[in-house]
Image: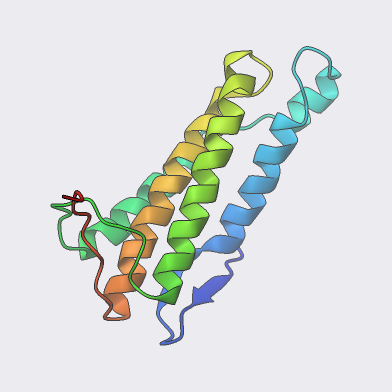
Length: 145
């Protein structure tokens, strides 16, 4: 498996973003191939499968083991790397909401929505990991008084 390793300013190694980018191409192909009108050969070629979801789960678990337990809600913070990952998570959540009606209508594989959901959790976990490795503090959410 070819991996593109993302390095933050202090050369902390992160997970295989290259593989995630390739999987996102597969997600796009699946969404762009409506089951009701596409030829069977196209549907078969763009089928999305669950192993990618299992990979995300494994990566989430790996990073979570090294993180302190989360006891409060946190705000997107923790330095440039962490904040960029929180932004990517927000974009991923938006994509997940946009895909939900397509999946509910049966035009896309349900695993597409599951993958996007787990990807946003992965991005959140890696954002926390980046903040920790760079020595940056996460900002705790406090209800405005």
